[in-house]
Length: 594
Ligand code: C2O
Image 1 (tube, protein in one colour):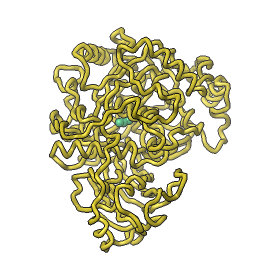
Image 2: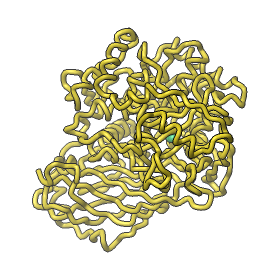
Image 3: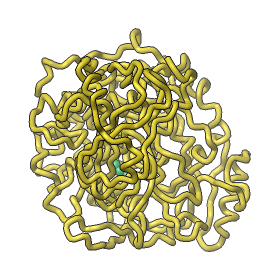
Image 4: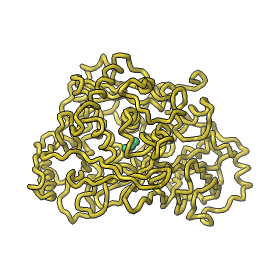
């Protein structure tokens, strides 16, 4: 692994500005020896930043009986017990949060065989339960520390392996059984659930602002079940540290073919020492791969995001069509790791390469550990000078709800607002350097500007709507001349959701070497993991926006009236049509120009 040549700045309490003084204590990541002191820290945090949750702690458990209680009355009942008006109040309201599925209406899940396009069905519905309890976060006495998967001890591996092994041996109809847990992902991601009372609209937890919260709760209960199975309530899931060069291979503990952590359905080309490919960029040079990865991390965590929705994903409420738009990490690094691990010899790139099967690989939960860690870092580490406006206060976000089985096989209802603070949920992440934090590409040379001025690239309006079946370069008028707070908006991106799709976006790029993205011109990506959105229609439409100001700061745009955009399809760009593209002023920026 080529680490010696890379700058690896470390993050420390003293040098990292924090967005909010009440969070400054979070800079000290938990170490195992700090278990006792964390309870104290957590009390402080609870007072300072989770006031909105006080009502929940007072909420009583709600028990319902399937079939005896009208579903709508049941929802109203739950709302009443919250003592607040922020849950569903009337059916007629213009928008409501996404409600949990009705388990006994769970249908078949669908997915496509990637090779012959044939549609398959799979049954992945959970057992039905008569009783749903409104979940209350238990008090935190000892903070769990999720470790970096490359750094764990043999004792940890032994315990983790034993826990997964026991999970696999549970009775098949136990909701905590390994396959039942894997099927949670299938059911929530491959159309098994309808939105209650919303006709044919499905519940989909990807490509929207529900992505991070859903997967956080999913891992939370998975972790508690594993802990219960080995009688160790401090057990913490590992995270695949793919954002750090030292973690950019499949973690060794998942490679032992005799271990319960092993899954034979993986791409052999991705076995260690292959470097994880966070951009699915065809480049075999491991040094270049590491540099590309760090560029992608910097871009998806910081450089490309203007609003909270750019990171979290787009608004998704009751009645919304599925797939309104994924956030930067979900589209980018998250998608790439799924695809990179999945086995190309399987019909639908099982297990990791398709949503219906991803949860069958124990590596999935390790991958999502790091995805979840990125959310935590974004919330509490990144200074507001870099990422303003991180909070989403819309009640239809905060009150969106899911159902899970807890470690006692009890069906529980959980809400987004209860999962916003990982410390309050009782876990933290091992502290690891973030080499991408300041991984800015070198400034562009003056020659790039000359090339650009001499370009005869057509204007975008003459090309769109555009099917991205080849590399295409065009000009887009700027909203403001020269350097300004602007966004590049890709509108009405219509995709076939059953395909892996990936298209990268470059602005004012100097040359055509698109296998090196560690340069000023790389702006971001659109990508998705294959899944189905409905039995009859696999198309979905969304839009994305990418922040331009950091990129402008690394190149000479003085006096420019337009930018030159290059779209580079990496995978099946022909499955994607972009309706339009434009540059707008960044509405979340205080000043329109710098
Ligand atoms: Cu629910 Cu990584 O997918």
